Figure 1 (cartoon, rainbow, N blue to C red):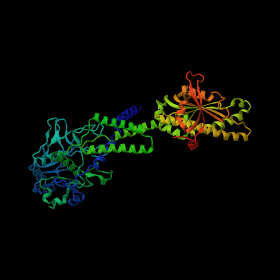
Figure 2 (figure 1 turned 120 degrees about the vertical axis):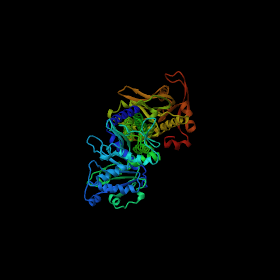
Figure 3 (figure 1 turned 60 degrees about the horizontal axis):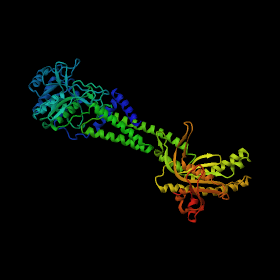
Length: 632
């Protein structure tokens, strides 16, 4: 049942996941892992950013900046010998004056890269660099919800392949290191240095049918917010940028102004307020920096397992939840195991992410939790029914302590939803009133039942107090068992039950004296009792129909105990409570009680004879023990 539940939960979660209903939770987990991943604390020594702010625009008194101003900025930067200059500003239209000068500078310096926007409604690059290696597209992949988690390397329109702006800049930097982008011979994927960048696919990680067109990869945002050295455009024009901040570096020029919208949310954003956005020039810095780490540091891309492995991972946690649910009953254990299981899952996923493997978190977490809670609820309800069955059968016939013990060891008693039949050693106890039939004919029916109920209640209480189980009431007779429903595992336990049965019988003698005194005051007759006790094997189990079941014992031992109670009523007729036991019981009670041998007799319906003894009382050393009740 638990296995079936786990499989059912897994199938439901798998269907929900395939339908994209859990995608936003998985992407949320990705964002948290990005935030928790240790960041590069030092400035990236390979990249410098130049930001055109609102103040810079106000100083220049126009937007866009003229070609003359850009030409001046390029001249200043080129004097310090950068490896690459990226201009993240659209220049599809000339902005005179100075257009010829800007075109000359750009055409003479192949390390200057401009931008274009891909597509039918895109933006063309500066005319002088169109269809050259000095242009790269700056398109950004934005997930539903407005967050950037992926970057593009290539796009194609069916005829031409276009390079990304960041890839152009990284390639120019790596050229001086003797590294060029190449195709991996094993799979034709892009390779930078020793790192092969596997292209993102539509269902990688937590994505479901994502737009995977072009050549994409997952961003790790390893750089902190202060990882890039930045200067204002005014600093550049006034010559206030140290040459060391430009020499042999990638310089990216972009806009940081509210009037020119170029802002993005990333996994590092903790909300959707404006102060949580990053500008486009910084985003291109992150992409370029990650590409350089691939090539120079051997950093690995973030990958994800195959679809089959992810489904197995979810199924595994669904089954783990079922197994834990089978073992959990208390609220405290539920809280600890539930929270502990989810914590372990998150830790495994987090450390896997640190190793650059993005494995599912929320689908297995949901599978684990739902399976865990579902199986535990089912088991609790199942046990509630089992407890009701046990209590229905025993609660009125055993003491609270015995009932609790029965419940604690229920697995020994219950199988397939019912009480299992067992062969065990038992001391069977029969009790009957002397002369009840003659007396009952003389009493009013109501008075008779009240009198009999007070007697039965007292005797049943003594049986339960001494560790016995009230098995049956028939008229004025009581059948009890000392040794059920839990099987005894040693001879000492069997003998302890026999001694408790004899102690109970002696306690009944004292109780009948007390009752006779009360009855005498009410004008009721005094009564005596006969007890038969025998120890031996019985079969214990449910007896009756499906509408009315009773837990009882049957077997030769039961028959012998019944015959002992009714045997030769002349023996011990003057005793207030005559107690007859068999030789098997005598061997268990040893010298703790005073007994008298009646003889070897053949009981009615029995072929084999047994030796009968009458219990006359407890020895002096045993009286204290007897008065205290159950012998442990």
